[in-house]
Amino acid sequence: MNKSVIAKFIGVFFSLLVIWKVNDVLLITPCIEQGGVFQFEKGLCVLNDGSLYTTGFEMPLVILYVVIGFGVSYVVSKLIGKLFKGE
Image (cartoon, rainbow, N blue to C red; front, side):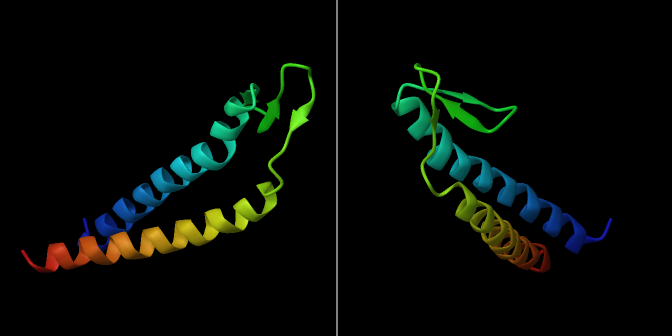
């Protein structure tokens, strides 16, 4: 298998991990701190009284996910590529 393909795969994997952690910190943790339950199927935070909790920056997060995905994937794949060339 081509070494650049492996580097890109590792970059994409790390970008998914970073996006997962950002989602946890910016959406799920505030929901739990407000006393709600995050419904993963619908992507909603339901408080104990049945109302929906929103942080107000859910839509900008989509753009942030794209930027993080491309940025982390690019940087990690370049670093892994340099490690492979150093062998």
